[in-house]
Structure formats: structure tokens, C-alpha cells
Image 1 (cartoon, chains in turn yellow, orange):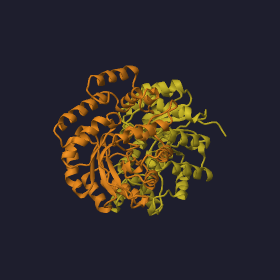
Image 2: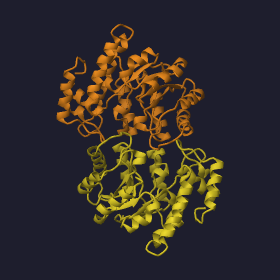
Image 3: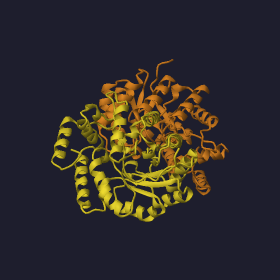
Image 4: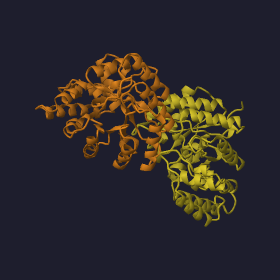
Length: 303
Length: 303
């Protein structure tokens, strides 16, 4: 097995397609992963926008195994392996590391609120030590709008000191560019990879020296986002950024996961792609038509 | 197997004792359950205060099985079986129902925020239908301070209409007596059992016709709380209520789960009882001593 490589660039929390009975549709999943990879987008499977929280541990293991069996390269994968309970986070992380995944994206435990850095440090520590594998590359997942539990600079520093090399980076989905910028300034020079949680700050992130972005809308606008990523030093980058932001805004005017699935459903002529697991609800036909019309008004590869 | 019985009275989200390595300590768990039962307290195992979110699904199955093997009666159990993912909620609920548990306490999915009633209805529906057992008695768990996802009256009504008998009641841990009172007034007359989520409103709940309470501090003050429950119609009930409220307040001045575990540790002379899983942190010695001194100042059986 090859050594883990440093991850950078554009990653997508891969949408999870379901059959009519809401079990994962494996062939469509493999196709979608291959499509993203072919455009240069890495696979942050089991992210927030993958409905990972709505998948059971056994389902996630099976989906990862199915991708590997189909030849999808683990070197391009950063699966989300976090749960609320240490034993389940350890189990899924071990499986990902043993499978050769280049990194894992690790949520904090998100049930109990108002917890402190000491408890969070112990949580991440117990996962690192429970996995017990030097190939682990853990990317911390800061997404307080969802988890209500954020990761402080002090916590990151303590983890970096305790587990140098294994604590590999962060995804910042806090929605505050100043926070992302301070993470880049403080930790990126040490080789800690800082990913923005949205492509709307991709140009800022790259200019500041960050690693890239892990963003939902790469599922539907890989072309536009990758064009910026590949040419961000060239003239016209600001214009590309503005255009991908417009596309994102059109999707975000609807519930984001159902909207992206609706777009893939019409792009692939596969109505089942619209299905989401509860508590999410798919777009209505009216919403889907409105989304499609709104996209058609833009000059975007996502239309 | 006997028919499920209607649950009422005082239940406790049973604290989960751990060994030094933070694996569940089964003999102490069985002892603690027997102790609660002997005082008349029912077993809401795997609740918020049980650190259920920090236990894996396999661990919860094993703990339930261990209690049953030890002869702890499932007719007095209301295990928490909710997770974020339908398949995991179904699996744990099926196991509880097949084991003869009188009811299950069901969290809403708590990862995604800002979800609507339609998605929550589908979530609970898929669990009811996935379990597919008429013996199911589901108690809905309204605890927005933790989940950030509440259960509206409209949702409860829709579930009651769709699954009469199976949707058996609610635990209201919202912290708003007016909300609890409105649940009792609207739904208790139909046989929907309304439990307050704290003993601080036990007298109000019983006077309003509610079913009782499911409360963390029954782990440490079963005697005081049961005294009120058994004599609430007698003179002096208000005084008993005031006294148990004082005891609760002393515990709540500290992080509640670690504080209760600290009290059981000194009461049973078992220091390991203090252990909690991350992200929680056990009380410091100083905090534990302060708690003990504060309790000693009260006339409380919890001291």
C-alpha cells in the first residue's frame, strides 16, 4: 500500500443516490464518483451533503467497499468517519485507513452541547489512539452551524502538538472567512492543510495559501469550480469566482441537498436521483422547475 | 410474551457506569438498575443522561441483553433507541421490542438543522413501519435544547392519527412548563402519556393529569422524588416538591452527568463510577467535594 499523500485541491462531499426504497443505489454512486474524479474533484464521501448522518455504519462500510471493488482510488478519498460515539468513529476510521483512504474527515461529537476543549481533545485523542495506525491522516471538521460544537484554535494546537503528522488539516464550514484566513495563516505553514467549506471563498483561500475547498456544489458544478482552481493565478480568476458564486446562490435558494439531487436527476435523466432520506425532503416538481429555470438564466456548466 | 403495559410514574435515564478503560461496567450497571427498580423508578436506559450518544449500537444491544439475562424486567424499561439514521433506529427499536421492552424513547434525527414536519413525520413513520411490530410503544422525545430539533403539536397529531396506539406518549425536556401543560391538556385524555423531562415540575404534571416524569436526578434522588410521586395528593406535597427542587439545583450547579456520577461514586465507595466518556469530563476532586458539601447542607436523601 502506498504512503498517504497530502490532499489538496477541490473535494466534493459526494451525494448519495438512493433507489425508490431509499437504499443506496450503488451503480449510480460509482458512476457519480467516477464522474467527479474525471473532472479532477476528490471524493469526500460521507460528508454532511452526502446525508452521511442518515446512513448506518454498516451501510457506509458497504458503500466504501463497493467503491474500492469498482476500482475507485482510495488515494483520492477523504471519507467522513465521525460519529457521536468513540467506538463507532474508531471502527469507521480504521476501516477507511485500512482501505488506503488518503485521509478522513472527522466531525466532533455533536449530540451534547456546551462541551469544552478538554472533552473534545479526549474525544479526538481516543479516536487517534483507538485507530492506532500511523497512516491515519485526520482532517478536523469545523461546522458549528450544524454541529453547534466548534473547534477552537487552542484545541487544534493541542491536537497538532500531540499527534504531529496525523492531524493533517481542517475543513472550515463555519461560514466566516476571517476564521478560515486565520487558520491558514496560523497552521498552513506547518503543513496543516486548510480547506474552505465552500467554493465561494476558493480564490481567497488559494491566494492566502490554503489547500483548496471541500464543497457540496462541486457535485453539480465541478467544471466551473475546477476551471477556477486550475487558473486562479491567471487574469480573469475574479470573474470565474463571481460566476461560480452565482451558480451556488441559485442552488442555495432551495434546500441544498435536494436541489443538487434534482439537478443530477434531470442531467442524467434519472428521476430516482431526487430521493433523499428523512428528515430531508426532496424538491417539489415546482421547485425543481424553478431551479432549472434559474440556472438556465446563468452562463453555468451546472445548468 | 405479555402485552405491553401503559407506562407511568417516575423513570430515570439510567447512568452508564464505565470501567477505567471506559468500557461499560456491566455488573455495576445491573446493580444500579436493580437499585432504581427497588425504589419504584422505571428504567429509561440509553437516555441523554445515560451518555447513550457516546455508546455504539453494538454496545447498547449488549447492555440491554445483559440486563435481560440478569433478570431485570423489560416491562419496566423504556430504552432510548433513536439515532440519526433510520436503519440504526429501526435496528435498536426492533431489538428492544423483541426483548419485551414496554416502550422506547425516540429522539428525532439530530444532525440536520432547520428540518420541517414533513421530513420528521417521514422519519418516525419509517421507523414505525421498519419495526413492523404491533407491540411497539413509541414515546417521542422532545428535547430541543440538545437536539435543536423540536416536535410540534402538528407533528404529534399527524403521528397519532397515522399510528394510533403505537405512538404512546412523549417526554418533554423542552424546559417550558407551558408547553408540557399544553401537551397534557391536548393529548393525555386520548391516552397519550405525557412525561415531564424534569422532576421540578412533577407535582404540576400530576395535578394536570400527566403520566409522570423521566428525570436524570432520579439516579441520585429516587427516594425524594418517589416520596412526592406516592403522596402528591396529600398535604405537604408542595414542600416535598420544593425539597427535591433544591437537591436538583445543587446538582445542576455542576455539569449534571459528571455530578451525578460523582455522587454515586462516593455513595458506593467506587471511584470508577466517576468516569464519563468524552466529550464529557468528570468532575475535579474540588468540584466533587464542593458538591458533597452543598448536598450535606440540605435535608436530602441524595446527600
